[in-house]
Amino acid sequence: MYYWFAATILITANVACVAANMLMLPGNWIMVGTLCLFLLTAGTTTGPDWTTLVVVVVLAVVGEIVEMFTGSAKAAKKGASRRALLLSLALSMVGSVAGAFVIPVPVIGTAIGAIAGAAVGAFVGAWMGEAWKGTEPTLRTEIGTAAMSGRMIGMLAKLSIGAAIFVFQLISLF
Image (cartoon, rainbow, N blue to C red; front, side, top):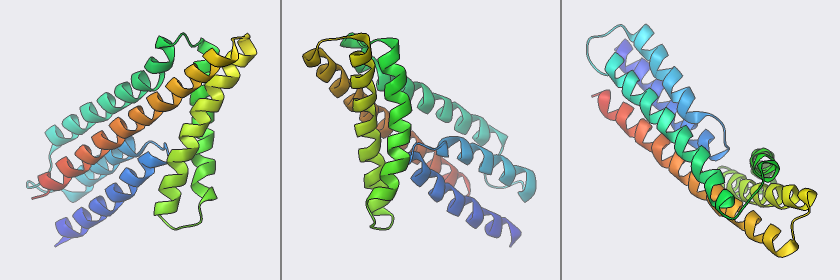
């Protein structure tokens, strides 16, 4: 009975973690932590084991690597400076959090606002970084657009990996 109570808590927490990924919070890593707590407290020989935890850690690492490289690779291909890449990353985080509060529709509005805020922040950060450097306006816009699309691809990839972590953990419970 305790196993299924703990499993229900794990599943509920992991659903929140997948949603947290949309807000650019470390949802995949929190899922790693919740699984670790589950393994330490459930004390059962059925369900997920430490091998499951290793697989989940590997998936979380892959998610971070994919997000990091896709987020900046497109802008870097267009010739973005480090300053533009760093500002793009920083403002996409700020934009994601701010965007979550802009659209007042519960859950869906928060997710849409967070994603849109991250996109706008990535664009503005890259554009400002290149403006600071003195890059021509046309190239600034191209770099900003590349940073924005790269950020969206990276977020989607990380969210997909977060969903895979969720499904893997869910299946391992049975």
